Amino acid sequence: MEDLFFYMFSSVIIGGRIGYVLFYNINFYIEQPLDIFKVWEGGMSFHGALFGVVVTTLIFSKKNSIPLFLISDLLSICAPIGIFFGRISNFINQELIGRQTNFIISIKYPGEEITRHISQLYEAIFEGMIPAIILMILFLKKKTKYGVLTAIFLINYAVTRFLIEFIRQPDIQLGLKLDFFTQGQILTIPIFLLGFIILYKCQLKQN
Image (tube, rainbow, N blue to C red; front, side, top):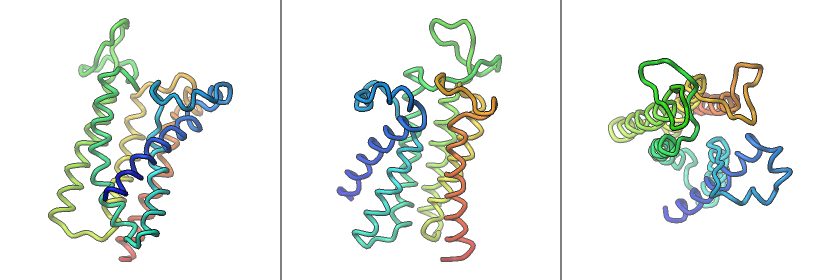
């Protein structure tokens, strides 16, 4: 577990940074390649971190002869807790802000006259807190096949992220794709498909 923690920590940092560079700001980093290493200035991608974790889990599972989905299920229980605190940090730091709204539940940031959706808190609740509770209950109270918890985590994240992105301010350097979808929404599609495939293989085919 200590080895796994070290590898996961490294893969999240490296994968998250590479994902941000490739998916969200590639033109800037082509001109300023040394800034790729300035992680303290921000710029991480969940999708990149997830890819790093997937690759690391595959290698670790094969090397140590541990069932792949056993490891991924344990990681899927822990991941929402990290997402919860990450989104709370985004809210405190005024990052990844919501779009303008007149909704009764909204916030006005310093220096702005408009009110915005509290999208970071919505993500903290629906991507973090709620799935963390549900997955833990399933893990402790209901015996599920290996991989089911992984599938639930991936599908919930993809669907929740896709919906909340409609009230989250698009990245200024990217804007909207087709004047409607954000980069984050497009990147959640493979996550949803992966979760559905895992669920099908582990639950419906009972493998």
